[in-house]
Length: 206
Image 1 (cartoon, rainbow, N blue to C red):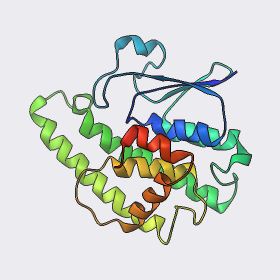
Image 2 (cartoon, rainbow, N blue to C red):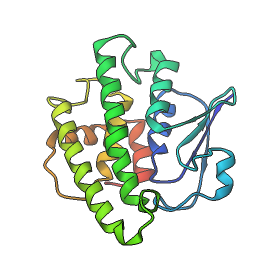
Image 3 (cartoon, rainbow, N blue to C red):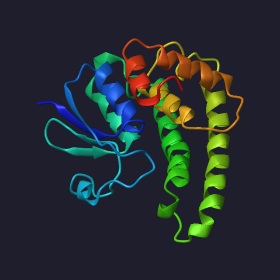
Image 4 (cartoon, helix red, strand yellow):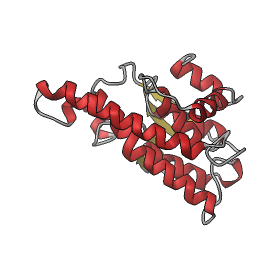
């Protein structure tokens, strides 16, 4: 049996698609035509009660959500594919640390900016909420830039799915920022033979 990934172009399921491709895992991709930042149809809650993407159906029918959790699972499910370091190692500790850091602080900031109606019932507060989210996002990227140094990837010479995740989040930032290590890491992800074509389909040359 194969995996089934629900996503839409430019959304967080990009990184899950990349991980499945790196693992050579068979999967079916079901993409919605709606744009990121718009609500999912209510009917999708039958698949994911939280109504968010990405959503991955495992070969045994189990549903997984939360991009970082899916990446951790896939890295453990395909230990010979180099998606992440071996559990129990110091490198794996760093892998988990920065995946969770990015999920809690950066991904959440993206959601607050893109879906302000989830975080306040006052439409007059949307602009302030977005500004605070952008500031938090920028601060988090600065912390990650130091973590990625000296590079070229988070854990050194070997790219992991954490790098793909961080590169995706980094490309969602639209302000001005000096983060040369993240920029170099993103360029390495974009140049990867397997990940690069998936990146361009989702993000173009960004």
